[in-house]
Image 1: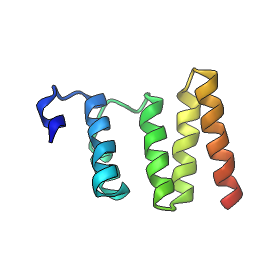
Image 2: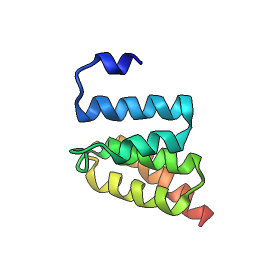
Image 3: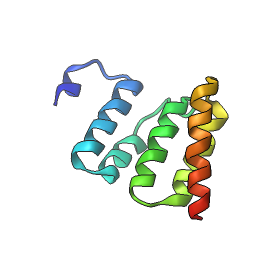
Image 4: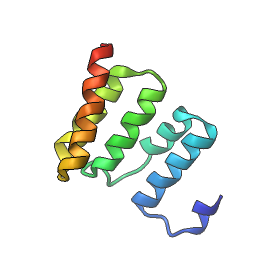
Length: 93
C-alpha cells in the first residue's frame, strides 16, 4: 500500500513487486515484474526474477534469469553470489 504513495519509477515498481511476492507469493511478484518497462539492463531485475522462479521451482527460468543478471553485474562480489546460485541450480537440472 505504501508503494502507491511513492513516485512511480521502474525501480520503485520492482521493489513493489518484490514486496507483493513476499506477501502474496512469487507468481504475484513475477506477474507485476512482467509489466515493468526499462529494467532489461538492470541486473537486480533479473536477479529478483531468478529468486522468484527458484521459489516456484522453475529451474530453467531461474537459470536463464541468473545468466542474464550475471551478464550485467559489474560488482565482483555480487557476481560471485549470482554465479554460486546459478551453479547450485545447475546441480538440480
